[in-house]
Length: 94
Image 1 (cartoon, one colour):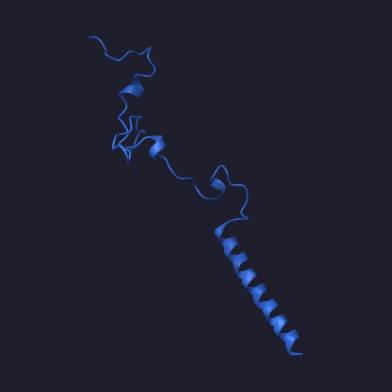
Image 2: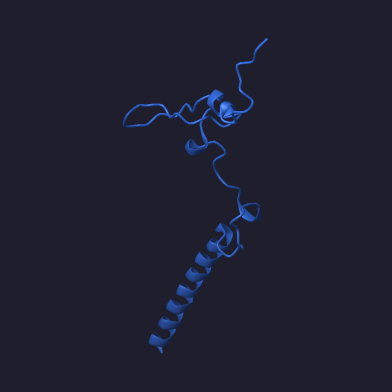
């Protein structure tokens, strides 16, 4: 009984892998890349896409630009603008 798979050829698994289901918008041709295991598309077309938020992300440096901090900064800027307007009104009246 002879096997058709050559164990000396490491690219055999890649050649036998299912192909990506993504298609090009302009040419309508299918991608010829191998699909990632458990996905129907290749790594270039979204398999394992997205990154975790916060410290779980490898590029996370600090929390100074989080949505919560940015909202606080906006609120503080509004309060400071109101304080400036109130101070301007109080000095112009007297």
